[in-house]
Length: 488
Ligand SMILES: [Zn+2]
Image (cartoon, rainbow, N blue to C red; front, side, top):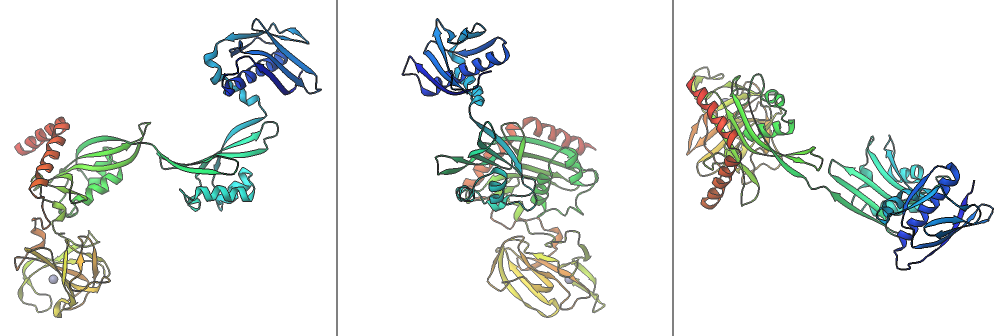
């Protein structure tokens, strides 16, 4: 058997690109080696008309010359290699030449390394990939421009492309690192010269897929939604959208319906990578129908509006507490006073909740009062707009920074449930003041935020009708069900 360790050849056509010539050479050698090894018929797809001869030296430095005679390759030692059939198909040369490269002295090897406990990037590069410490530092410095190497976590798989010596798998160089992030993003480090690496970020373009779903609620809303294959993140988003106007514990009953249209982000392979926005969300409750449409407000940010363009999100919280299971320990209105033991009007609603439970601002607004206020104990009053204010009593303490004049956002923590002032146990006393009169907080429906102005409203209506046109069947079926339930 011949081992070939050197090769020379003469190319007739000097204008041929170098890599093609190399391809020919590799193909010929491959075919030759195979023919002398196995004696089987060998078909190599090369265009041979451009190669005049191939001159090889074997291990004993004996010269083997393959001459091209009428596209047959003739060996000066063996005569015509009649089992070597060379086809005249130049189309395949490039493709085949890649395959034949493995017969070369170097090979490009792709390795995957799983991050183990206690691994760090420099250790992986030096111990598992086999780079020297300085080289590994250069690699890390390049990587750092787009990725924090400290972010690797146990179980993560990183791909490495390395050039190795074919005979003993000794590392020649690191060519590429691929770090996959999520389902669609990759950090790629490439060797660009002897001393330099370059790191870039590749991100697949995601496609949007719109899903519509509706169902009857038996048991819990999330159970009903999960049964229809709606992902948890969308369920959470749905609940969040309505949390401003619906008390899920009290208002949602078995037999009520939910409806929604939402977007998925899908990658090239059709896999759902991310759940996108909810475009339409509806709750058909036994006593109320709430329908919300998403709209990108030109002032920035997106919000949910009912069909009239009223931002329901900005309706005051009915229960501005982190503990949504808090029960009403004393309702609004006339009642026997627990301390004075006579009949008085209770100007707010009391929610019993553990001491320390976070209390939220019921809507966007400005703090008017934040101080100890007699029977109210620690007390905050927020003015939301010209029509509405809210007040909170018996707080254990205020949140940091709460004082008169401070602007707060809906849902922001303003303080914590306590038992200060005239109180018989930890609870939140919550008041809603409308045009100077205290009203029942559990009955408010009005929006307090800014509704859409005339231009925005016109755009909003376009968005709504486009959505309805796009999902004709969904909205038509909904209406039918509506009529059915109305007849019952
Ligand atoms: Zn009270």
